[in-house]
Amino acid sequence: MYIDKSTSKGKYVRYLLRENYRENGKVKHKTIANLSKCSADEIEAIKLALKHKNDLTTLSTIYNSVSLKQGLSVGGVWLIYQIAKQIGIVGSLGSTREGKLALWQVVARVIDQGSRLSAVRLASRHAGCDILNMESFNEDDLYTNLDWLNENQAKIEDKLYKKLYCDKEKPHLFLYDVTSSYLEGKSNQLGAFGYNRDKKKGKKQIVIGLLCNEEGVPLTIEVFKGNTQDPKTISNQIKKVVQRFGGKEVIFVGDRGMIKNKQIEEIKEEGFHYITAITKPQIEKLLSEKVLQMSLFDKELAEVETDEELRYVLRRNPVRAEEIRKTRGEKSARIEKEIEKQNGYLKIHLRAKEEVAVRKIKELCKKLKITDWVEIKITERVITIEMDEDKLKEAEKLDECYVLKTDLTKEQVSKETIESRYKDLSKVEWAFRTSKTVNLEMRPIHVVLASRTRGHAFVVMLAYRIIQELSKRWKSVDLTVEEGIEELTTLCAIEVKIDAKPAYNKIPEPRKSIKELLKKAGVDLPDVLQSKGIKVAT
Image (cartoon, rainbow, N blue to C red; front, side, top):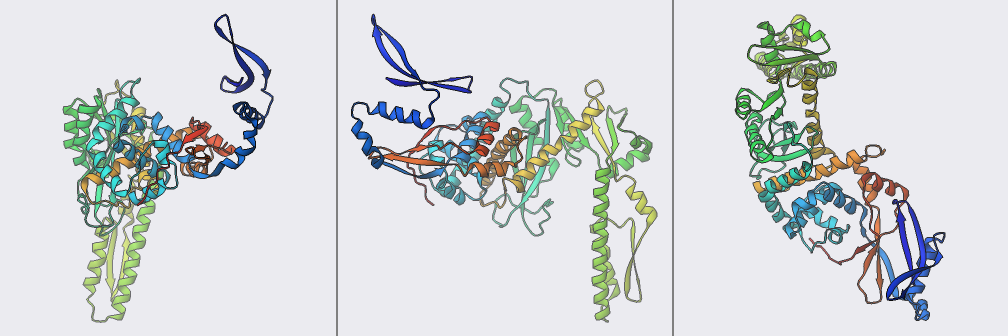
């Protein structure tokens, strides 16, 4: 006799009390009662009675032989593991010890950012070893694992790429952008002084290039020495597309200053196309050569074709204009503050030279690139600033104007599509923002070796892919991804131990909010989880 459970359409559950018997040598089933209206507790009680039907007296001692205690957190790790499996990260990393250690680094980065040491401590609070079927490890294992990730990065990226496009047409458009990340120490092998986007004076940095598809899904990440100029990173990306991603009729989309003449030639040599923006001096030059006219910017979206088989797409951006005006105002305020400082110094130090104070202010104006429309004067040891309104008005003329440049013809793509694809670069910027500060906190970088720096960046990219996927699935949920994961980490297993038998983890029924998050993510919780009893230590 046994209880038969059946689920219909994943929604309706029925329980039948049945028994087996033989008739003419065939096994048949007989339904004794329909238990579907019984509660879950009643069902479990009947199962327990059937299990001990030959000696019901043992039921009185079962309670004393069962040990229950709070287990490790399972909700967050289980969710991230299942998402990583669905999008191909688990399969791409493989089932070796190094692959599992790499997977734990990714999971730990999504849950709580920090060093390899903190990732080990995290494993002592979360059921990572039980869910990922891992053996014990320490922080040294994770540091060594970064070397393994660096060595195998291309293979892993290729597997993820095949998973992403297993039943799709390969991408025609690639988004590429570069950022920098400053370093706290001075010993990192890739650290160097360069153009610092983080505005951190006196700190070395690394340069990071991220290549994405048109949906903003990262395909590959590369770390360069901190003094590498943005355009010099393009060649590597072209090689990756040609040799590994096999794209045809490819379009590279890059920001102004990224795709210059040399890079354009490299792109065209491969038969690819490009979309980029041009700088303000380049716009001014085209206006002076009568290639463009200011009246074109008054249109919703205008375009100009040239004899060199180039197309320029033009429009105004009032939001950008406001940003530039705000920046210009901040620069003026900074100059006025410096003038106030120098005037105070000249007033107190009567032997101080006026020309030295003026020179310092002019050098600051030059650094801030506002010398075209400001003039510094000094009268009776008092420095003043004067704005040339005409020149300022001339400088503001192009504040809200931007021009896109491409070699794509009208037959290949419309001007609206060109603008839309360029705007897609914001997806890469969002990836950088998320990776550097919001959820994943790439810095501080706690490694010195070049291989481990690159392995660390690769971990962050894989973790970002999970964050990105969850943000899509939780789009309708009034929580950030970070808040959702934090909610799930509160779901802990119940460790059950009966007599001397091995313990196991019983997953309790989650509360409504966690159920909703799991449902939106398309993830089901197991009823029971193996308890390996693995202990990690630093």
